[in-house]
Length: 466
Image 1: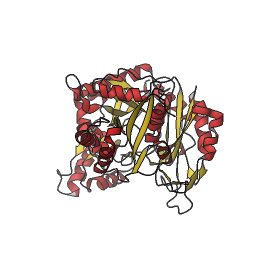
Image 2: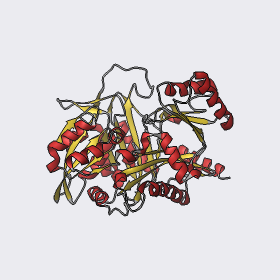
Image 3: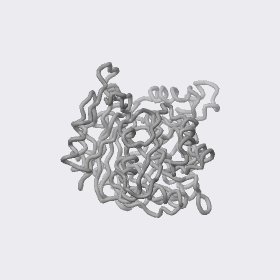
Image 4: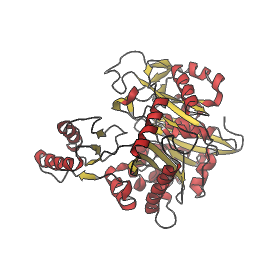
């Protein structure tokens, strides 16, 4: 699908639909003939179909990934890493040191999602008004359960019990507990707290902030950040925001850079806050260690301004799938400009997008267990492209291509559909049509970007602002 121009070899470190979306954008280049070298968690059918060379590294071990790059380094011009585990483990540092292949992801030093505690201290230094009130419970500071419980109770007295409890290290969005959502008593809260604390992890307990959430992402060339349109994701497993937290069941993006429930001024505030954090990390001049997407920020918009819930140092999943299909710039050019330090701005089409994930029967506590058929047939959704054309994208994630050509669901989010339209509702209908056309023992939320959700968010922000 890529152009007939200059040949460009690209390494993609893949886990899930996020990488498929980036591969799709790379292969749609009109100016470059893209050759893909994919290091994958499994035989993702989309990635296998597009890759010149494809290797499966189930644990995404950085040493194994580096050996794959070393064997192909003369054909690879640059690499991209989507998942957080290799970034935190220093995959960029290792590959660049051993092969000289430039990587588009932060270095280990700037993988700031490695520690939620360090993030809070960084935000406190750069933009304290965006920090909720918080307290860090270091696992080495307390000798007995009674001691730590007394300290937690004291902080709960200050907060009126309304807190979020977070592990210091990343847990793919599934380790956070929030008062009123995951527990309604101090004993339940402490049970969650202790499950983290006794494993030897520091625990962050912070004020629960009321508002509406959005996700902010930005490309970075080390000199400047180039913000992408805001998105809204859905973490809870079931319709009506019920059930356990997941990696994300879907997301939406409006045709403007901001979402319907926030204002242009809110968006500008987001950019200013992230810029201040970037300035602190960049230092004087530039900092190539921040190259890639060093800022995928969860914001909570409140009556007192925008608060930062967390910062990740990689593309969002599902949020990046909202953006990549409507990227107006050639993604290969964007990558080269990040490496060269010349990326001043990234343009997107003025379109709305909606992502819906289909997941296995035993995902998100939908069923406790499932031992039935896990085969998945995508022929129906691909046939829909005759109706919708490029306004429907299909990105396999936790799906495996077998030697006989059949495809099977694995344990996590299996496949997503992206609908693209002039309005959020049009995009939503396309995405849902796509997800309904997938044959297999899968389920999905049916209310991603539903009009009543968006209206509720708009009303809530009006109430919070008085």
